[in-house]
Length: 126
Image (cartoon, rainbow, N blue to C red):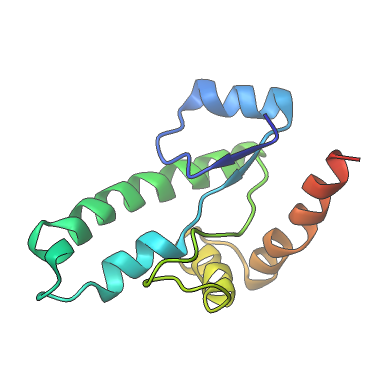
């Protein structure tokens, strides 16, 4: 498996398998963070508790993505786009910011995930 999206609930066994196979994780941070940050009290999603359930999943994910990164699993930037909350093309820079803010990467590390790791994954297919 070359690329795994989301992976909020990865565990030690999963991390070991990703390291063995050279898999890469793309957590897709912007869509859930926008749900947490921008859902309004009058929105049906707010009334159903979506921001809080998304926050719990996001916090679990951040803990596990940090753990995977520390073990050596490559991370890629990218997010679910094409929704009202993450229109195409408008959130790419925000994804880099979230790698710094929520995953603890140095700003240059966020850019590397948005550039170098994408190139590595693309080159694997050749």
